[in-house]
Structures are given as C-alpha cells and as structure tokens.
Amino acid sequence: MGPSPSGGGPAVSLTESELAVLQRAAQGDTYALIARDLGYVEKSVSKMALRLNRKLGARNITHAVLLACQAGLLDGRPRRHGDHAGFAAHVRRGEEPCDACWDGERVYRQEKKAVRKAAVSNAA
Image (cartoon, rainbow, N blue to C red; front, side, top):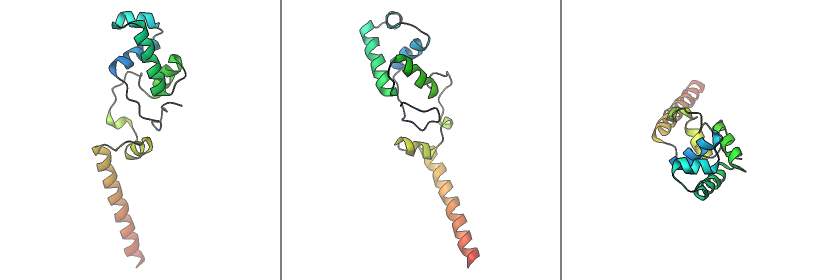
C-alpha cells in the first residue's frame, strides 16, 4: 500500500542517495543515466530502486514515485514537525511521539480532566 497522503500510513525514512534516485526517476531518467550522474554503477541504482519499492510498498519505480509524491516526499517543501497531525499520528504509525507532541497531548489531557472535574462538581 505505501504511505498515504494524509500521513496515516507507515513512516518512511529514505537515505539521501535513495531520495536522489527517486527524484531522478521522477524526472524520467533511466537507471544508467542516474548511475552516471550520481557516480554509481547501474546495478547499484537498480538495487536502490528495489529497496525504495520495498520501503514505499511499491510494485515498481514508477509506483514508488507516485507513492512518494502522495506522501509529500517529492513535493520540494521542507519537512517540518507541524506538517503532521501530532500525537495521534505518531501512535497510528507505531512511532514514539516526539517531545512537542507529548507536550501538546499533556495539555489536551489536562484540559479534558478539568472539564470532567467541572462537570462532576456542577452535578453535585
């Protein structure tokens, strides 16, 4: 399936070389051309493409490019923390939430607890 554009799919970590190969494949370059320009042998680029397919859950390099675009890996924007849905997104992905998300979750839980306490005290 691969990563979803909403961020609910698996987190994908690509090396700089894998990202370079993916970007060049997105431009329509052949493995031979990519290898020549990046200083690899064609077989290495082919193996990187297979690794990309596995990481992204793609059937071939074209599908990998599509999935990477949907996941925002090839849109050219810098990846910032605020680009994802926060604590719940980390949990869905099976990741350990980052400090900023934990902080936001603590505040959220404290606010919910305060609302519940207020409702109990108002009912009494």
